Length: 599
Image 1 (tube, rainbow, N blue to C red):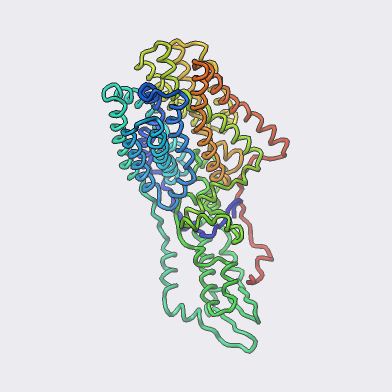
Image 2: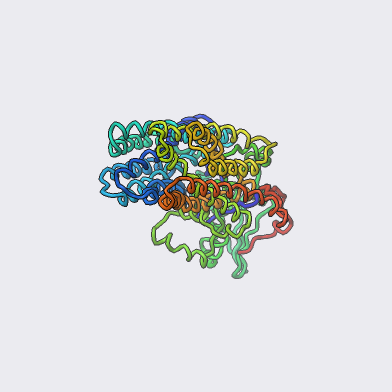
């Protein structure tokens, strides 16, 4: 079995996981994800238009008003683990629909805002929660439908973010001019509700059981099979249960110890093979047989705890049970997938390791909230803080925190900065559109480059952030409109790497088995950093009366976030760590595996 492959308390067999079609209805899923990115990201990243209106209407400070804009993306990232749990339990379609409704309600409630603090809850927290539910579902839904074509499909979907920013910046400005900010917010609430239709396209994949599985289930349910399995010929020194046809393992009871003697051919069935259904079909058969034949045994509970029988094999097809669900690149770039796709998928389709009963008490909140097994497993995967002990991941996390502090600065402040130096409002708003279209081009180009074997993706990631940060830090040197357009284009193109290549670089550094855990923790830290970034810049303006210092600070933080990652190869060398390979082991049974299994 592959490294990192485990089974959780509420296990799932590979045969219960749907096979991504790499096309078909998947292209409608891509369309829905693309349109959802257009609307959600387009509205979020065009907040700079509303920021100028809120400053005028509520007469608040720039730092205070910036909280509204920072809360939306901050909450969107911060609720990532919760969204993953809900998606694992209820599916992408349901979570997206609920998210669209919540975001729209948040916008509608903002119409009644008497002060800026009211908008913190309605426009910031409530709408951010809705966008967070939609954001993660839009990513997961595409990955759930694609494997070999995933990079191309994901690239199309996320391009909606840049296109949406390009469209909604002037549209929001037009709506504000025609209907004031309240009318614009109401109209955009109606646009958000269209995401319900996009979410409907996220049709869940259906598990298609093989004929052999159905035949086995039918035979298992027959009364004559039950009678044969429960038949117990008496002996003087104990009880022996024997399979008359030689197809089932012999289960013997001697004294107080139960012994499950599995013949050689049954052990061979337990070896992971190219047929991904075979492993769990054979294991399930033996476990079910064992549980039935030992039903009268005094040591039944002990045996069930060690073999994790029927409850362990409860079928589920939650997308979070795939370790590669957040991987945005094509799986064909992974050598193990190219050599044996079925075997690779088997190795990455897993649950968290079994949690001992004494340690499980730490998660008593799960039981208090009545969370389902799927939700518990997803949260455990994404919120395992032990990964912070990894120096490489800790360095990458600090880099992401620095970058997130300066990431949203241009989206919020660039229009107001341009307007202050005498550029008319329409042209100032167009700077955000430039960021959006450049972002789309950058994601396509850098995504294509990242798939090439001759490209060092970590260096591409580092260098892009370093360039983006320096451009932001140096942008106050000139406030002419052509210069600002050039800055917006550079920022938009290179900042796309921050979102598009994060999961790919994580896999290069940590391996695929740790991606879900790393991605969940990163979302949380990025959300916290996004909370404080724009308000800090606003307070710096309030204290200095100029946007120069805020842009210097924000750009320096992004540049530091990129520069510090250049040290990762050196740290890896000092630690003696080799790049993760996610090897898949396929071995023959050893002699000790041929011995009877004792309970």
